[in-house]
Image 1 (tube, helix red, strand yellow):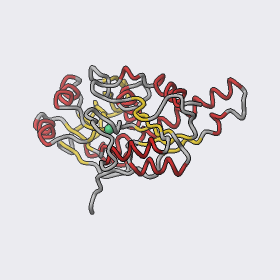
Image 2: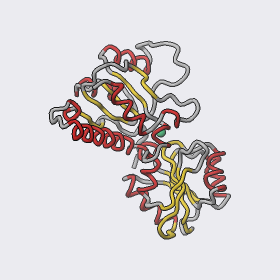
Image 3: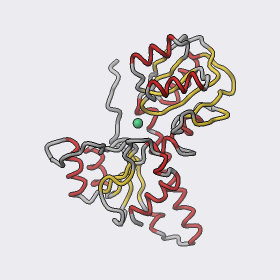
Image 4: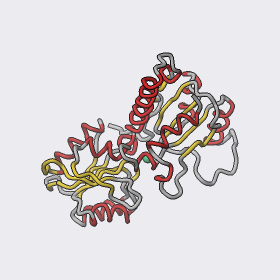
Length: 272
Ligand SMILES: [Zn+2]
């Protein structure tokens, strides 16, 4: 089982063509023909993740966020990113990123968010088809929706808008809030009452409130951490199918260690 075998499975589910402009999905460190000893799935790649992979004997890290973006001009051990690349290569760790393609794909992150809130008539809301818009089974107040979000995300959430406002049509968009144009489209063009997202900036927040729309804001980490479970289940399902087709009970895929990183944590913490 090579890195390429694994990334083919992911790209069949979430084709790279779905990634938005300037994203950097794909194999960022390593080589396609490397044999996979184990897989660690994480939202972000940090030095902790790389050390965890080494400890667990996993030579493939699958992350949601690409840790290499444009502008890489050196691999210098004295910089945070340089040290990660250097350590990964030194220990034969391959690092693959599946980012906005997994946000956008059918059954991906935003479809998962839509199902978490029980949305019906779900459809993509932007040209690049990242977020989803749908309707709640019955209208609820913004305050009640915030409680559901708090339970779903297992953390405190913030709201923008009148807590008693009735919400029927809802947009979900995991991770960074769409830019102001996308936010406008999501709420105004689709006539949505509310958006559930993270990282909405001050001026966009004002626009939401002053336009009479609502928002529920959770952390970037909380809205996207399900990435790990989605990819884990995808791989396990694929391996099970493969094993039942080939009838090989000792197929390597059955014994391949696939773990969700235990060292990952949100970079921002609430102080109580
Ligand atoms: Zn994100």
